[in-house]
Image (cartoon, rainbow, N blue to C red; front, side):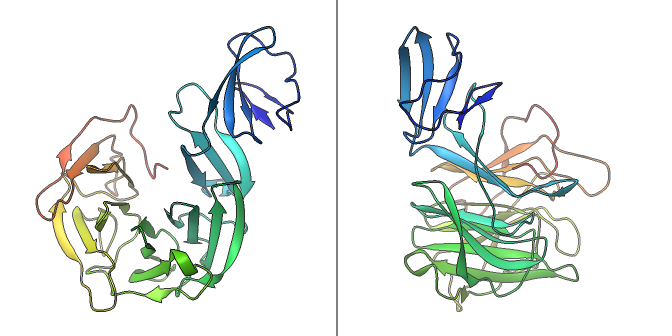
Length: 287
């Protein structure tokens, strides 16, 4: 299918002609993995976007959501692309990626499955490996060799477990790393090249801690509390560049929803997070 900003038409091959293109329209060619803008009669300006994309999975909208959506960077005026569905429907999964695949671990229909999304063709499969404890609202991040599913909630308790998967053998059983210093769920997670970060979340109450693990984080490792957010915050989202990690949005547990965006500088082994730009709106559990 081909997508433009406000309509959907059926364009299954790059040789097909889109239906009634209008000058300025942007279309998606799935077989070429590129956007094409209609310039004039039979003239198209195309941009290859195969290696620059982000993905949204699962979620909740009155019922559990099964969609996998893709955005093509820089994602300015184009629409998201519906590429596949998850094999097991849930919300609050712990997600991370290698250079070739994206991983969806567990989720709050209390499952232990691991699903793998192939970046080369946008297909999703269910792996034979499982995380040790069925749970949702976990955090996920990755090093160059491993992916990590951290903490979460199993409906009766908040957890401190960490499951580690080796990317080169991702169909095998996951490896149980050391425990987090504190139980936690609904936290923001992100990573630098050497460390994984868990920011905010809910333990026995809502917290402002920033916890760090040092890769590869095996059974003899321990975590460190490295910084403090300006406020206690849960249901937050995290992302990172090569230089900074960000904790975005969230909720204080009573009546305050946040539009704050706090930033820490890598490696950030100590110190508090600094305020960065604000979101346009207050938001709970941003994707």
